[in-house]
Image 1 (tube, rainbow, N blue to C red):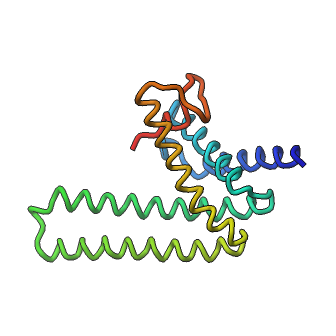
Image 2: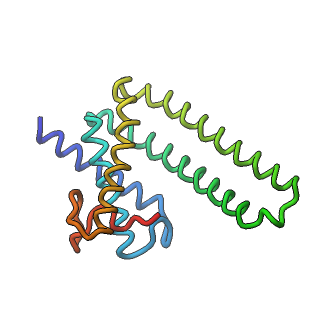
Image 3: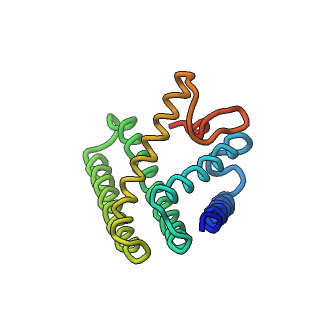
Length: 179
């Protein structure tokens, strides 16, 4: 059973890495060269972290990952667009008319509403592929994953050794992540 689980996990990681690479054209995503390698390591680390902590079966993982990847991509795009809109407003507020400011505020509000709707829809779709306990656990695992990455990034900044995935240079999984 352990051999089947290990083989399934490796297959899932390979499929996700292939999906990630095919979804990004040259020069897109994290970039080229070393940063792309770090992005691939980070993706593999995330897949392993979620699969292990959610205790996904191979059948669950096969249905979960496409659903989760699609949701994550759409949510990330929405959040990036919202951040650009907020930056634009902050930089140009003095030159914007009251109408433009009101319109920008409405766009921001709509962005939050769209994200909330997206989360509700994702949750409904998740319940079709995972048992309710694992759906709840997913939200906890997402927070644990983010906390783990932040810990590794802070340790890297402080020069301390890091747990987790190690690259060629001994850097942790968060080495290529800069936000």
